[in-house]
Structure formats: C-alpha cells, structure tokens
Length: 341
Ligand SMILES: [Zn+2]
Image 1 (tube, rainbow, N blue to C red):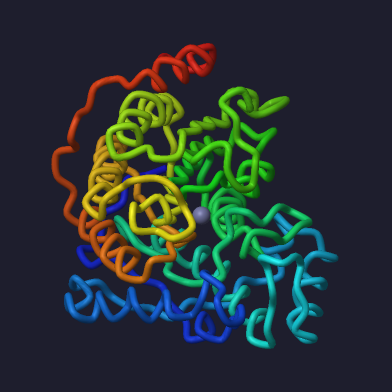
Image 2 (cartoon, rainbow, N blue to C red):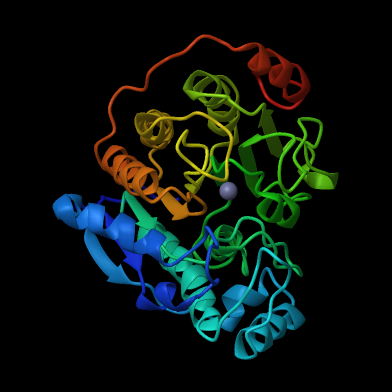
C-alpha cells in the first residue's frame, strides 16, 4: 500500500451506547469501566486526541465474520434480557452497544488505513476477543477486533494484519476466526492454564494458517519482564517478517497486578513498555497501529493503563530491551519452525 502522510491528532472512538449494556450487579465488565477511563482522560485533557462517535457496524461487516443466526441470537437475547452463559448476560441496551463496539473497531481501521491516522483507540464495550464466529461467551458478543481486521482485508486494501492480544485471557474467538488464515498473524500472551482454557503454545494455527497463531501462555504471577521478553523476542520478530499493513492491539488491561479477575503482575507502566515495542515496530514498518479495548476490571488500574497506552501510541520512544526468558526459548523452539526467531 502507498505510504500516507499521517495526521498529527490521534482518534479516540466512543459511543454512549457502551453505557447501556447492563451486565447486572457485581459483574466486573460494567459500564463504570468506560466512565472511569474517560474521567482519567478528561483529567489529562484527552491527551490532545480527537474524540469521535463510533458508528454501528454494518450487517456486511458483521456477516463477514459471524453467521446471520448469531446476529439474530444477540438481538433476540438483548430484547428479552437473556444470557448466553453465566458470564455473558444481556440487557435491552446490549444489541445497540454491541453494534457500536464492532462498528467503532471498524471505524478505527478506516481512520488508520484511509483517514491518514497514525494511531487510535476504540474504547467501547462489550469487549470482543472471546466471541467466536457463532458463539458469544466470556463477556463478549461480537468479535470486534476480528470484524475490524476482516473489514481492513476485505474493503480497505490491507493484505496482512498483525493482531497482538495482551489481555490476560487467551483471545480464543479471534484465534478461532483466523485459525486457518495467513492473512492475519495472531499473537496472544495470556495466563495459562486459565479461562477460557485454550491457547497452548502448540496451537500454532491450522491448514493454510499453520504458524500464523503465536500462542504465548504464561503462568499466573508473570510480570513485565516475561511479557516484554515474549513481545521483543517472539511476537515482534515474527511480525516484522510477516510485514503487516496494519497492526491492531486487543488491548485488555486485566494482566495488571491490581486486577481482581486476572492473576498476573503488570504495572501501569508495563502497558507503556508493551505499547512502545508495538509503536516502534509500526514506525519501522511505516504502518498504523490501533488499539481496541478488551478487559481490565480494576477501575483505577484500567483508567491509568489506557491513558499510558494512548500516550505511548502517540509519542513512541525507545522500547526497553529485556533478556530472553526461558519461556521465550521454549516458544522460539516451537515457533522457530515458521519464523526466524
Ligand atoms: Zn481478559
């Protein structure tokens, strides 16, 4: 794709419908998450970012990933305030919220690939990375990041998309959707064994897509050095070789040490370090990078980590280099069959 001249002001996608997806008392994935992170951004004058209203995803965008029965199920369960499973309840506002969450991710990639944006953040809910093509689960209704990646590939001229998922949980939905595809390189660092139980190192993709799933499980308690080592020595070199036209971050913040759901030990600043590696790769390849919100359930940690991530995505800087961790060596042994690691 032809190089574009980037705009200076990054874009932040949001929509009031995100506040109307009511998951009920005590559910960690709640509307207050958006309120908390936006209050923090407001306090920081939005870092100078431009706020834009996220549109609804079109039927065409959703149907490129999800079958029509799945759309119907989400709409019907929303109308009667049902649930897909114990974790994934819906309210009357859920349908509209889900449409805008997927639509915001699509609008983000449009801004990145056609609008001259260098970076952006889609901060909507419900999150998406657990939703499979025909199955909602784990707080997720539509696979927002997969719908956006598909949109980039089908309609915006992208040929290869790199998705890095740093949510503490395995992005099983995204992984399943592109499991047999070479158009998407998917890298996920996740606590393991842990919900949803998928994503062992040996799951490298299938068929045409063999080698294009980089599943990087880490034990509970893992901190910044482990995450950074896997990013620096596995995900980034593979992505460099893959040469994506677009980088998307499935940006969950539940690997933060303060998170009540995840069991890892990242600091707020760790998200800045992770983002700096991804930012540097995007600059090296002259491609844009956008982040799509996934999990993150401690309101204060979420808000500060999102702001840090946005700051670094806009400003960049030199990434901190770490030594190879033993998990990195194990990953390189398996994934080195496909990439020069
Ligand atoms: Zn998560």
